[in-house]
Amino acid sequence: MGFQTEFNSVCKFKSEQELYELLEYGRGKMVKKQFRVFPTGQKVIAYAPDNQAVAIVRIVASIAEINFQGEEVTQVEMELVRRLTEEEARIQTSLAHEMFFGEQS
Image: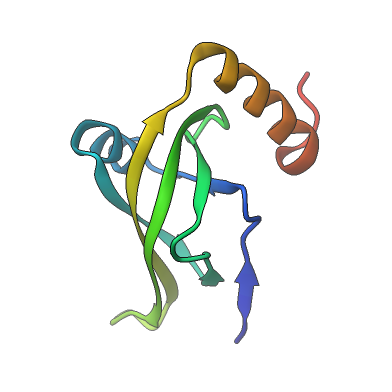
């Protein structure tokens, strides 16, 4: 058991529904497997499940717990600061592929 640290600039959604709720309502949450540390109060870049940069979000809360199935999970609540422009999204996506997700083909 231990905490896995997220990169300070990355908040990657695994679910389209979670991302949709954030973009539609301005607030949202996502659930990650394992215990993870997200920097509460910090602004980060949010990425869609296909690794495309989409927005700047502020982490409001990060709660790590063991759920009723005995799994380690972290719930992250966030608020939308703003969507990225096309150019910002393209540049951030390119940088993230090089730094975090692996080279683009």
